[in-house]
Amino acid sequence: MRRSLLPVYYFAVSIVLLSCATSEKPVDRTEGSNIFDPAPVSDYHLGVDDLVQVNVWGNDELSVEMPVRPDGKISMPLIGDVQAGGRTPKQVAEDIRVRLSGYIRNPNVTVILTELRSHEYLSRIRVTGAVTSPVSLPYRQGMTVIDAVLAAGGVNEYAATSSAKLYRKRNGKTHVLKVDLDAILEDGKLDTNYDLQPGDIITVPERLF
Image 1 (cartoon, rainbow, N blue to C red):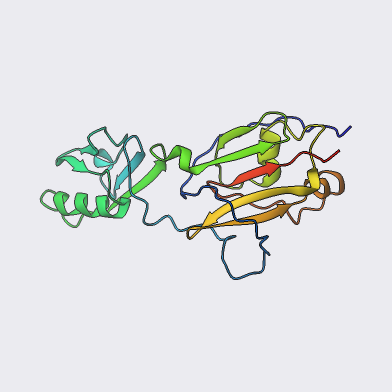
Image 2: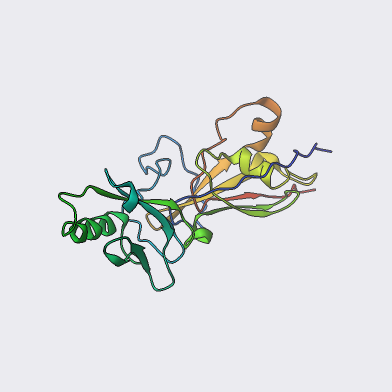
């Protein structure tokens, strides 16, 4: 009987919108698809409940942190409500900069997304199949396959640990990466202990008896 891993729980954030489909073609780490590179987040559009931090350089009294309201707006000192929902942080910063120019000379404004809330389920990691407790957990930067499997309570006694798979969607196409949990857990070989990205799905099949 295979020894189950002890559960470890992780909490997290993140920013890429990925999900699972049905392609079964294994992907080599060296191919030019760039599926191992983090997806760009510069074009992320803010949504309701996303937490943003507005910094106005040299004016601490104008620097605030707040969630995007249900009406899609945030409130700023001096200038009042600013539309944030549906816009990128860069666009919001530019709007604030222009409006503050009537009160401050050459304001330097940045808007930072500090907590992603509106698209939480699109950025979660899922672990399914022959694990102790299938789980959907928030993504945290630096998470690996083994981190997610541990968060699912480890594999159970029926797991086909050398046949696990990681599903990752990039540019509208789902890639399937083979994961050898047996090599990771028993031999310490980390070749398939991939760094995870938001939306990744790990499946652990059961052995054929």
